[in-house]
Amino acid sequence: MNRCVRNYTISATRFHWWLHHADDGRNSRRTELQADIVYLHKLWQDIQKKSLAISSPALLYQDLDLSHRVLRDFVNADTYRVRVDSRETFQKLTGFAGEYMMSDLEKISHYTGERPLFDLYGVEQEIEKSLARRVDLKSGGYVIIDQTEALTTMDVNTGGFVGVRNFDDTIFKTNLEAAQVIARQLRLRNLGGIIIIDFIDMDHEEHRAAVLAEFNKALQKDRTKMTVNGFSALGLVEMTRKRTRESLAQILCETCPTCQGRGEIRTAQTICYEILRELLRESRQFSAREFRILASQQVIDLFLDEESQSLAQLGDFIARPIGLQVGASYTQEQYDVILI
Ligand SMILES: [Zn+2]
Image 1 (spheres, rainbow, N blue to C red):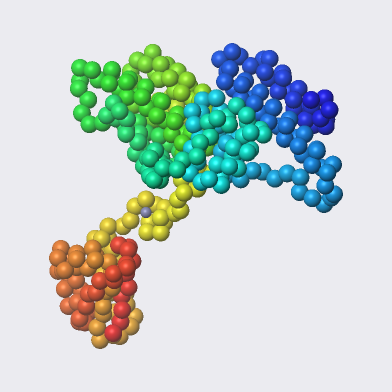
Image 2: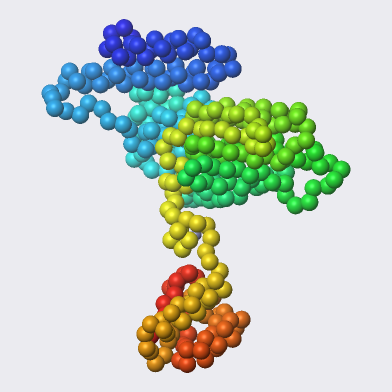
């Protein structure tokens, strides 16, 4: 290692310091760091070798493509197997592992089955679940996750009726399970920034302490930098998690065009009244023989049924006929008032 350039020697020394001072509970991290050192060292040697062999200007190194990055960043001693359904990628990965990650070479296998890999392991469903607002708990409770620009809130709830007799116990168990599930969801969804967790209120101080301990334990699987504060005066657990890449939702989703991200749309009834006010405005401003309302099926249905009287009254008031027409592609909030 001493033959390396100065920069690398410094970081290697720091790695050594870390290896000697890290506590014993972090053995797996130590192994990972050692693997990292070996990998980086080999990589640096290859870059140096290459630099001597080619003439400048030339590209000496660029970050790996996705499949290689997955292999480098996510495969460790706990990984059981890496299945690849493309022969080309499989060959590239085994070539890479043979050179840099010898101990993981055996784990990479080429999948040639008929069923798509994502189906075989239910990946689609897992993605769906990782984007859902509600996560169900085995104990019957559930967690509601809301991600806003400023922070993420996680609200733990018991499912349905909780018996009076085992009230405290049920709540305690639900919170314990939620602690594990939340720690996992933070990683799966890659949530960063401020996170506020609202566990179900617990009367016993030792229950609160146990839930917090369970939560901290579950968070140890997470490689991302975090700080967790205890229960606040309002009974909330506040924490921060370093923002690395984008969150899963930011990568896979875009703002809903129907509600513009509000998560709600105005009811068909609200739209009906908006249209009636618009009609009145237009009838005062323009002279038309007739008016026609173009709106979504739901809104037109209301005008034909519940709101038919309001429409008839307005028609009488402005002394003009008002026609209705369904706009097939109209969302519930969309409408036009046409002058004829
Ligand atoms: Zn929406």
